[in-house]
Length: 217
Ligand code: G3P
Image (cartoon, rainbow, N blue to C red; front, side):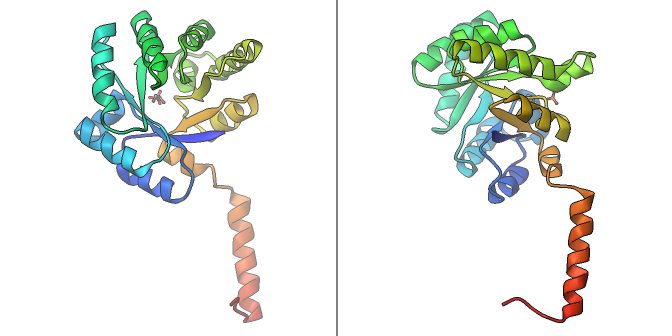
């Protein structure tokens, strides 16, 4: 399973990348707004830090506008992945861009039929939003399960990128179902390492080691 971080916070991205935990980054207009940075400048900086795909989202809603913005975003770096919304124009742009060899992430997916259309349009990644479905009392994980089955039924190569991940449990469930990628906010990604018994065990080992009076090396 690939791990992407869902942020435009360069300091967080650098820290996670230095720890060897990152396979890519996803951004969206809200995350760019939160960063307070110029989109081009911050996206370039992120692309320079991370080797894997960096999703940058178009904001035009018509096909021609999306293609124009995609061309401009693609100039930022070779590892840019164009993010398009799950609309008819977005799917048309997805097809045109992937036919041209671009990486495309189709975002704002909330149904299995939408995911099926994205795969038919040749999407590199489909982004089903787990947390936002949970927010309206549906089960976001059911959607991941349905998409996994549909893609496996037909051998679609589109990667399932579980998005709108809010908890460590979301990560575990998505991994159990077989999502290809999970994109996680920095704090949630870092929280995956935590377990009270690890802390307690380490504390006990270090205390016992100190009693031996020895040093390694
Ligand atoms: O990047 C898209 C997605 O991960 C957004 O998550 O928490 O705003 O629903 P959230």
